[in-house]
Image (tube, rainbow, N blue to C red; front, side, top):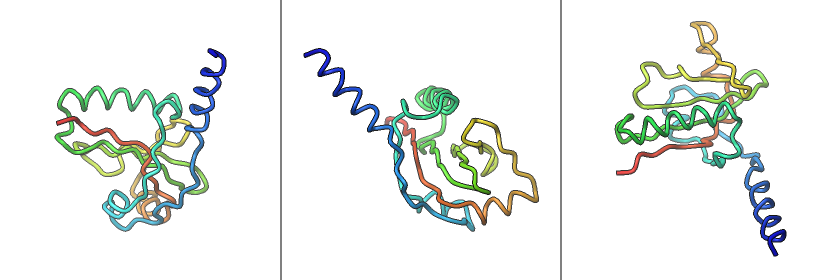
Length: 135
């Protein structure tokens, strides 16, 4: 019986981590295009890459201790130049695309030349994780 319960639990855990091929928002003119129109395909925290889980833990702790006002911290996944990128939006950041990373956790730094290209040619933006502060 214990083996059966363990097998069922593991099957759900593995199936729960299966990424969806959801078409997202392409080429954003304004940040609000992505923030308000990107479809949601939430990924369980346990299925996020290790580096991203660490970021989520930090932001969850910060958010639960009163940071971020009442706005959620959002994690978006998209594509740029055939690479998966992760964008972390938090409401008190001083710039729009400060926290952009490649899927391996490498920080992606936008400059004046890549910034506009990134904004208009990035594709398939999907909201994958969100931290909301409890009221």
